Image (cartoon, rainbow, N blue to C red; front, side, top):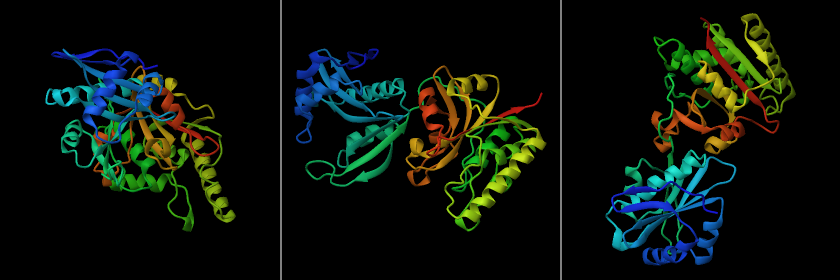
Length: 376
């Protein structure tokens, strides 16, 4: 069933959730706008009844004059704007912008943080609408439509209204392998506003925190290596890890290299004990982490990159704030080929349930957290 949406109104036009009584109007709008790739009556009926979709209609003095169809991808934080259409007699009245804003609100309320869409490459008007609303192009799909036209794929991160922004400065990693040190640098900047975040310090932290892969490539930064680097700089640190065992070992096939990797991590653990880094095999869930942030704690958390950006790699994020539904994070990774800026990766609201799903890595579901405080 299509979930109710609070009504939005501008002038004589209002946006509301569609219901079964709108089916004929939806078909009329569809046929008036599109000559191919039309949604069938049967499909519209299914979308109206599905918990995995939202159908919104724009209603004017003469009845429905536009619609937006939103699909909620199960098991992810992604929503897709499948279709947006305005009756040709009602264009130029800001209805498309209203429907787009309502779609973003509906997606955010459904715990989605990314809204993605495809638009015809020859539809300059629609592309302009999306660009003005801060959507960015992330690719082109050739021969996407029935008539052979390509599609431009676009997306937007949904920050939502009135979210906390915390006090941690944002810093983007300068290499593919320094997400952990970049998060550590942001945490240091939070507790020491005079600190200058720069690549040399980022790489210094990496050298202190990295494991060793020898000829197999750059080592990953484990929780105890990062924790030790922060403890040496005067912060109080708590590592929460389960299963409590060396990380990244299974990805190294050579037995001798695995032996060295394990030995290095055991050294970090011994050093952590000397530095006063506390240790627990009970990581916090998202709700508990939110409570910690309200007490002034920051957390560097290991996630699976697959749920964040589609790659099955371990990745560190900085949790620095929260509200009653989200953890607010800085993601140090910027996709420069997509022309991302700090605005795309800082202060991201991650719904509690989604965060608990993404904050696990590998087949064993490793959960690793580095909690950071400043001693009074």
